[in-house]
Image 1 (spheres, rainbow, N blue to C red):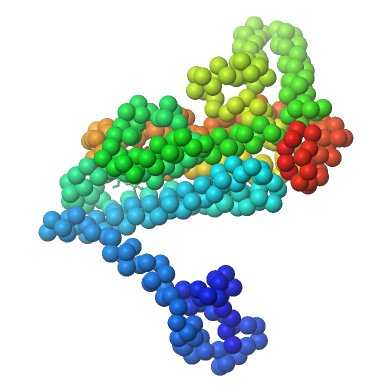
Image 2: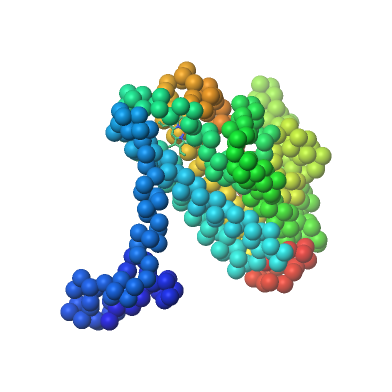
Length: 410
Ligand code: HEM
């Protein structure tokens, strides 16, 4: 006897009719091996109906065919873009659910954190796939692209609503966008009130970056008896004093000047993580994005990532950086594709300078979690990290739903 697919409720039935044979069952007794689909015979929804393939598979209409000059590669061009849009949809679905977890009044406890990380890692895997998917389109030659490019008229990925929603939901703010994008990004939805409304809602809602920052600000140990910032500052001050003594003892004047200039830069950088005013000035200049306490929370999690209660938060920070760097890799692969198809001078169908505009989007402005990358600047060797107090060690080794001294849930 075959079992029903355990993941699908019995009332729906596995749409593909997949069943499996229990260990030890003989093939001869298994109707699926005899080519009889018992589930299909019992009625229910079919594979094609479940996936609404009639809609999806009838949506590839090459404009070159419509105009009576069908170009073979336009089919690939359409399918590739559609595959991207489907994956964008899944990524947005995951990011929305993750934001909801963080926004929930009951907070992100450890059980939910596991689910959040699994979903973020799923997003990472999808974007990895999207980075490589560009290569499939590179099997099209520029001449073949030229054969149907004019039929695209003004159609451009620049008009992809889902791509903009994704950027906004991750936390890209309008002021981070490069100039061409700031002035034109709304314009493409002017005649589409529903799309414009969705775009505006995504700007107003807190992005993933916002909700993660609020959560980081409540990292246990940031405030209260442990006071991570004060302890870390003490350790850094000691390192700086020792470095200065070594520099002062240096006889070679050129070397001394070089070391002194390095020292001043390092000191200035460290001052900026301990002094909220200096930090906020960097935020104003667009060099930092996180709030001061969120940055300290992330730094603390990175320093003590081996403590059990920080394992998952640390994985979360890594997944966020993965997402940022993979999107940059996608942007890069897309830019290379565009240069291959159009060169560096031709304008895009969306009206931008094409390659030049896209190249400008590779800058740091589009990295939502830039502060997590730059945090390496503030790390010190393990042996210099301030030791945890016994009380703090207990807090970080106890998986608890209880609210601790900082008011942070597990
Ligand atoms: C032959 C292949 C492609 C060419 C020649 C091309 C060309 C371009 C150009 C020139 C732009 C700049 C805007 C403009 O049109 O003026 C652009 C933007 C864009 N394209 Fe493509 N593209 C191609 C494939 C794709 C694919 C497969 C996707 C997947 C969804 C995609 C998504 C986008 C997105 C999201 C933007 C906006 C990027 C931003 O503003 O940051 N493109 N594309």
